[in-house]
View 1 (tube, rainbow, N blue to C red):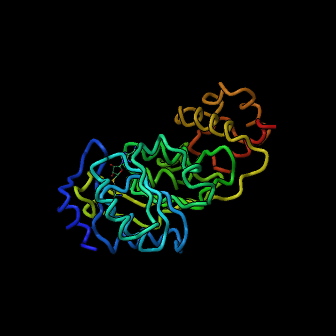
View 2 (tube, rainbow, N blue to C red):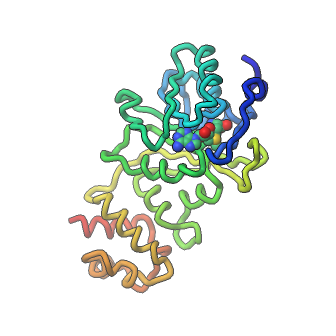
Length: 271
Ligand SMILES: C[S@@+](CC[C@H](N)C(=O)[O-])C[C@H]1O[C@@H](n2cnc3c(N)ncnc32)[C@H](O)[C@@H]1O
């Protein structure tokens, strides 16, 4: 099929800022991204925002069955052409990714999620995928492009300025890594900031922890990250006493508390 840039030009497709569109046209780079989840031959992949289909092409070339959700109807004719080149491999749904039920769309099959995310909904989608009703989730891996600053927050360690609620919620039952950084100049048009890819795989959920409690504790703790825990966690019943029981100094601040300590605190309160 014709090179990606040529196809985009032929369709007169230009990036829309309102839809968070920054396109990738370097097919070698796209193949490297599509290789990050591992062997995709015969695997199901859910893609958010295929746009002109650069990443989609790479996933199809890798042998995946791709279910893609795109909000911009201008991209649909171009994606339909792509579907003809890879018969039976591509299903495109014209919708808002926030409104679709991925488990239902993928028909109960385990699936990978791969996306060059629209920045305006990226974090909201990511946190939703981290908080399914049941664990392990149906997804096998997440391979997601983020602004580098958000990616750093996801993998951050305690005692760093990037460490926060997103770090704890990302790390307590998954393994999260940054396998690749992508320079802003790789995109058309180039965004203002650098990007990085996050690769996440599910891990074991620690026993006896209610996810909603961990969510609440981290919300309170990091909501007032400069305050001592005995102050910031005052609103969570039993939390300050639990700190004492666990030997966590209540004069510490949220950003010094390790993921394992947050989990221990949530476990104590979940009992
Ligand atoms: C950063 S671009 C990536 C495009 C393409 N995947 C690439 O790598 O070149 C983000 C894409 O997400 C689409 N998009 C934005 N918001 C969306 C939403 N809520 N649901 C589905 N797609 C959305 C945009 O139209 C755009 O095509």
